[in-house]
Length: 290
Length: 330
Image (cartoon, rainbow over all chains, first blue to last red; front, side, top):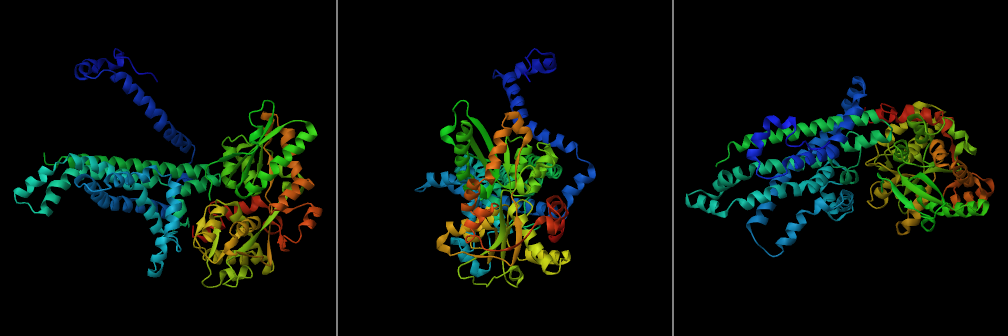
């Protein structure tokens, strides 16, 4: 697909308006590249999944996406991802806050550490976490007497998802917090606000949209996570099986239809959730103090 | 460790890149790594001596099911050496890359070496595991992989079932009952055989590991300090990992003769010897006699006898909604 030239008939209606408004040159070219790039990298594989799904009859599709085992996996995948993202919203905000507001020795190091879950191959994370939380691991050994087992349980899945999704919250909130000048807080204080009021009335409303974005990104990332979870979850049907694992399991049984059906459900669910959160974000901005 | 992605091991590195050298790609499953690493140079030397042609053999390893899927999806493997016949059947039914009667191409249903399923316990056998029945005693935790994804785990499931069925006078209901109880003792279902070995040996989960015999030997050798003990049950299944030429691909590459010779050589005394050294039970009686002391005697039953062959077993036990799914309440 080639970018349309600005004098192309398709642009006629808007070309005058655009040429007046667009001060940066190269809009047509860069938009063309954007469309082609997104199309090749994102849309093509997705539409291949849909094309494959088109060949599946409705009863087969319904059977594949609604068996009790699959429903248990939805619950775990969505539930654990939601919890992990929620926990990261809370702690991620604190981490971001500390990194923005205070200076302390080793701050650069801590800042770099936040990105580690981004860079680490997820399989490495999974193996490390499993070794740590297995009943004979450093942490698992301490938890075992309390009757808490993490590795190979749903709790383990949650731990892995929390680990891999942390940077998404921190990195979305951090720049917003950085722009929020400390003077605003000082100002609130001089006007007689308590610290709690400053937090809830001044800071939180300001960072709320970015927290939502961070939540959405963390949630979406956790939903798709496979590499680390397979190591730490026990992969037990109806107990610790996540949807991506089920998809792979179906593929290895040559059940391409079943795998595609599940993929479509995940695709639609993730997309609607992201859309919903985007709308929510827009809506929340309306209540932001100017 | 599970290998979801293909790991290509270029073995005959010295031969690579030399013009005119014939090339062969062998898509195999996980525990054969060490075996084919030793077999390939031996075959290359034999082929060179016989025809004067230099051959470079590439290996690809992964879970048996995912390797079959890779071939279906276009991995250019001239030969497949997988964990079970059902996976090669899949290559026929899904992609017609080889004929339906592929299993008649080589002797012994195209399985040049066999193995079986054994039990691995910790030092001193603290829970006194002697036979299959001990696995379903209260409090015993059993580690095995998910039969849906692991070839070895499918053999393990069939071994347990077959034992119970034969013990009850060939009563399949007894088999189902035993296997249902057995999986209620399983705390972790890894997706591959190597994964469950790691779970048992390194994570210290469970009291007993149901394992390939060759994997058990390997684990004992690898973790000498742990003093793992192998318990041979009173009866087990004759596990037959088959081999096949992927005829359509070999024809395209013009390697049909080479690929056939490659698999044929597995049956030669040299090939059998290498298999035995790598803990696979050789078919050749002379080689078998030489290694008789290494392989404990087991009463072995075949999948054909108890389950009516792989196609049947796959459909009844492991397909969606099959008995394995029913055990987990699906």
